[in-house]
Image (cartoon, rainbow, N blue to C red; front, side):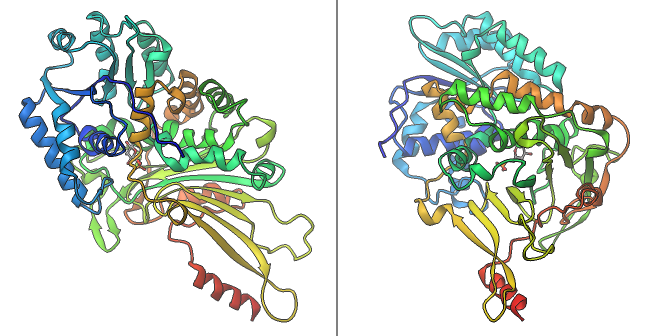
Length: 505
Ligand code: BG6
């Protein structure tokens, strides 16, 4: 494997420099990129924020956060110890611009500091994306001159619905060209999400089975144990649906459901995703379930309900759980429902895709044979698990369910990766294949429009913190004679052996 090329020199401007995203995810990713040696010595980072910080205090703030997180096993960035040489290298690149992004003087001051290549990263709330682009455009910072690139990274949520997403796009495209706009979805930075394309199209073993002919249905789950973690006021505007579904879960869906792209280039992959996302049908009223967590116990710890969280209306009707059944109108997926669910304060953290197969073809072993399942673990113990039947040892031909797993960490050295590394690197390299084109943003909004409309009224179903979610979600699948994969950990191999022994009895 050849080492990745050094990215070109550039100035990375982080709007929202005092915020959580910069501290918790972007700076750790920059640290990881520095460790891997791909940052050009001429790369600079300017933090922009209203916070009362100076170059020195911002460096201290970031340095402390990196050291604290590195030492915290629960943090996403748990690098162990921070290498002093790497931290010094990063610290030397950092400078701070105190400024309000709603004021034009901020952009005038920024323009004085930037020459050559630049990336403007909007790590701020969605309502500031267009004002930032307009501020940059006004002072000429989006103009690409003398071979220099100027790119703008837009975080999620990209709009609140189809109309606002289109309006945001129109505003951005009046200020910059499509190839300057990098619409980010950090799920596309996850190795395991990127790996789906290789799993499907680099193997004979899976792809021929990956269709309505063999699959009964697909489940996509993003279950979290965490609550809203101090983001109550953000969540009150977003809710679980807007926060997770038309972006993260639909990106996974696109990887699972797209046809083979013509090649692995940016345009072909985005075309293939765009086509399948465009074929997702608007959700039917009976195919949507919303829930909200009430007080409960998670892993032995008592947790308050969503309505008691700081920044949340005590009568809030905002959902912290959403489940949908989707249909994809393509020959490959005719009659194969995709069930999506996401929620906070559930019993386990689990991001996974389950492909459940139809029963064995000729029924030789009867009708009660457990269906084959292929499970792609996106987070946690990353890898793949396949579940199938085998003859139980002993006389006769009884069968027993068994499973085999591929664990990513058994084959590959652990490389610290919190997801933003590959996205930041790709943006510096001008590779937009891991970013979203406007069609991949609009199609999901179109599909969930009926849900947004329906959930303007009515109430979410309460579920206790620490449970598997609202009962309505179970009913959504039970109605079709199906069930969600359990959120609790799967039985280990010994448990599998006990099952086999039981079956042989
Ligand atoms: C973010 C959402 O985009 O994704 C959060 O705003 C959510 O609410 C997070 O917790 C989940 O991402 P990950 O990578 O931790 O699964």
